[in-house]
Image (cartoon, rainbow, N blue to C red; front, top):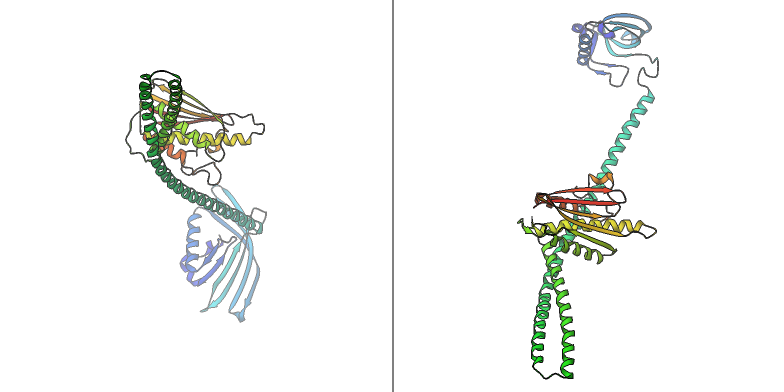
Length: 415
């Protein structure tokens, strides 16, 4: 405010070109005569309607360097009469001058307001607080970066695992393809042998009946029963191999009218036996409630089989986790799978009685690479892929869950 008395047009006559000036705070730092000029013009503009009253007196005036320099210190009070009212505050001013070309010019000045209370100006505690706040912000950003790095490493591990699983899937497909050929021989020859049994019985009926023929007839009955079991289980094994091959092939994008109930029976069963063949198998009661005469649904069977497998696998994993935490051992794992016709849609519901899905992760559940499983047990892609496949079938998937009671996925597909 004090420099308001200075005539900006004659600034060069009273100040050296590289004049410096400091104010109360660290931001009030003036370097050079042009900076002083801008400061004066700014204050004149901002204080156009203000009335100033100065009351000051010198505290010290001393000549230095054999009269070539001088020090001046003064203090006083400034009163500003504004439209909003009158503002009054004390000030202190020190200035260093030098004698140049027969004139006194200001080399440096320092103006400030004396501290009247804790809130009047910045003091050491304020700077400490500011530094602590900045350090806290840096620490927070560092923590965020460390968490991002951990997530990045986890994502890299999941991608590596996904690549391994893809390779394993190709290997399994190759093995399944090789198994299919001998399985065809087993099924075909068991079926052919059953026909031979009928021919032998026909030929035996032409012979004279006796103890030998009766014994042969009994043996033929036993052989027939064995062949039927071989054919039954061989057909089942062939069905499983076909399912593995269909699942390993990428979807060709072509949908066809599909018996949804039959697909569900096949892949729920395949998922169950896959879980039972794992490291930590559990006993699960499978409850199928499939609506009879459900109209065919337009599906890509190769793709949609992944949906059933992913949801069943997640259900088995969740129920295993809950069972391991139960101390009394009374927990009975149950997987309920239901189909139902609802208007022009077929509704598929897969429900488990596991630990449920916490509210904190429910919104993230379908995000790629998000997983609640530890280490490399999960890639975080199962539910993301599941949702994408359902969307490609013009369907919807919804989640309902209750803590420690159930998790229910409902899929609606157009018929």
